[in-house]
Image (cartoon, rainbow, N blue to C red; front, side, top):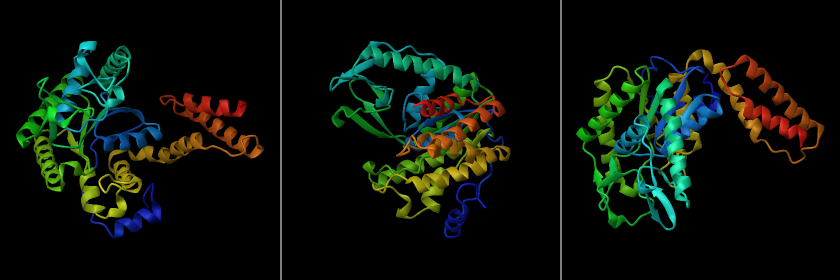
Length: 340
């Protein structure tokens, strides 16, 4: 019996190719903190961890796809780089950073700089103490901005003619991963690195080029792992591409894994990467999360108020039992709902 999917999950596994791999040597507990960095798929897994009250920080520069952008992000964090207005450019009235996702862009350049620098400071302190760093690589393609003579993390919808698209070699990816490893270990020698490859198919590159890209990432990552006994590979890519090889597991664009596929990958992540002693808490914390999203059509009924009181009592109990976790937001939510 599997923790999240019971009969339906078991039925799926009966008709899918099995991936055999080793569990994480030092599994994740609720005492740990986790940094997720990389592609949108990394954010999907991070979101599910957060919903179950794990302490995590996700993508300090926003969504990143290639190793060079992740390397640049970590350099900024570890060196406590201070961005200024000169590091931004304006396009379509919005100020952007070439090193950041558009989630950091803003119409006010001062606010954009402030958000970037505050995030770097918080991330540097977090990186010093984090126990696990999950890196998800999305593509071996990167974009070189001709005018500024630099690789960029995001093109921000600037005209394609201003960039050169480059497919990194296996050696270049491996060297970048080595640089990432060295930087992380210099700041936090105890951090366990978990590396995975996003199963999202980058069809804008074309099917052939997408496969070339993923193949280079796979080979580079395994060369990298072979050189470091403390690097763990989690097979997100293989679970979706080889096990769930059916379009019913894809979104409407036929490129992104859908919710069911992502949940199945997350189920494997919990089985192989989370400590068994913590698994009894996962579902009850997730039910607490779902309760905060519940919106009653008739909020003034006694039944709804009983629902709110039940979860408020649970939150207060959890706060006492799990003093290292933060339940203040949920407590505030249920108190406010009861008073409204």
